[in-house]
Image (cartoon, rainbow, N blue to C red; front, side):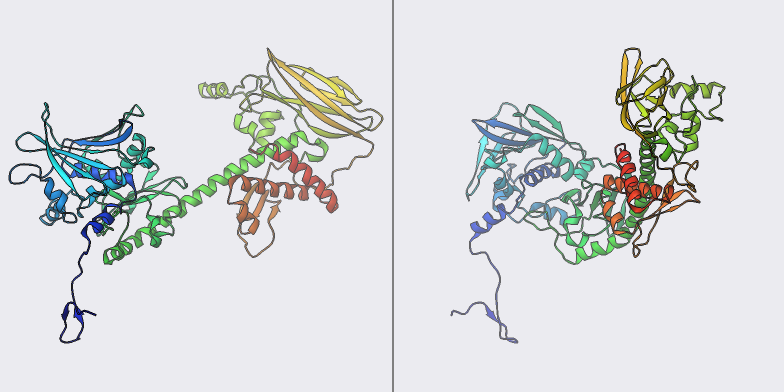
Length: 614
């Protein structure tokens, strides 16, 4: 084996210097290292911004059956040589030796490039690159480079109009880039170069000739609440800049990692160190800009895990703690808001179920207890939808102590907005009932508008028995008395309600029996209003819920495994809590029934409740 390098006198080891054996192979590897063509386009635009361009126009078109991409700017153009001509030769022969790096070393700011390889990324976009710039003599010069070719050429171009800035054309585009539309370029640049565009105030337009559309690249705007107390107003530590927004949770919320205004990663959680909360919570949008980080040269989409990266991670530790506290507060507020919404939905569903179930068995909250409506009395929309049962009794049913006649402009205005609209639906209450043979029972038609408000005026009622036996008495005022036959049977009632040209219909089922199950005595649920609910965390206990009769609330164990499972989806959580309400109400209001009878009641109440659970 041949001996190479120098011999170290102390250690006896032979030393040497690394060198490239095949320069063209190295250039090919560098040119192909950019995997994202949109990132390559962003680098071309950054070159224009570095050249102090004020306007940049990106054109996507088609020529001779092939797509092309053109980027033109009004910047300073290619650096000129001693003869005043664009120094294309230096650009082509000094790969990995960027002029911008030397300018940065001399104190220049606002310049992004530093590797001298950005131009080669055209290999991932198209087959050839033509770059045109003007010399001091006023003439335009063009450099041509081809993919997979070590050659380049520079020619003088003749034009009638003086040329300013730089124009870069890639033609033809690679076959796989036919879907590279102007809209995609616009969206990518708006996020990728967000802060660079804002800082330089450059105007960028994307013209898609094939799509016949034109787009203005506007820096991406984040949604949500700007967090001022975590350094969003400026630098926080080691020149790290944060602009973070608290938003509703969602997978689209991401915090991008930037360096000097250019996006490095769309989401910081792409770095394994940050795959934790608060970054993975889905509440945050925004920007973290760390200009001192070292990037992987080929793609500029990776971070080198060196001492600077360690400094970056340590600087974010106190910020992460503060963000986690903010997210925890947001979650608590959302849980409280969700609990109020769930309670309203469950109570509304229970009220609708009670209107349809046998009054003599399910009138626990005096929903059926009214003696008729008072004409021309405004009905509160919120109360009619359900809230406190006393409000429902007073406003909708019209018991003693109902809404008094108000006076003054404010009360008249409120009554105007609460005035019911046209008839939209009618419900027979109760919808299903049991009547003993030879007995009577009163049914009423509850009419509502599209928003759920009770409709009282200009209504014409028509009741009839469509199936089974029995007789009807009255019915002109929305109420009808059903006289049961002397033999058990199943009877179907139907009501038609007309308001002008609008007509609605509903049916109810009456079971005539010679034996009725009497509601057990001792029930304390009546006249208290529909119950609320609260949470008690008991993960080691098996109970799911308990009913506190004194406080009239359902206590739910939010540490139970079933609650944890149900809480992963809003709809499933709503149905679970509604099921617990049905269980507790049936168990409380039928204390003397056997287990089988309680289960029957539970199924019956759940059936009518879930139908109206929205």
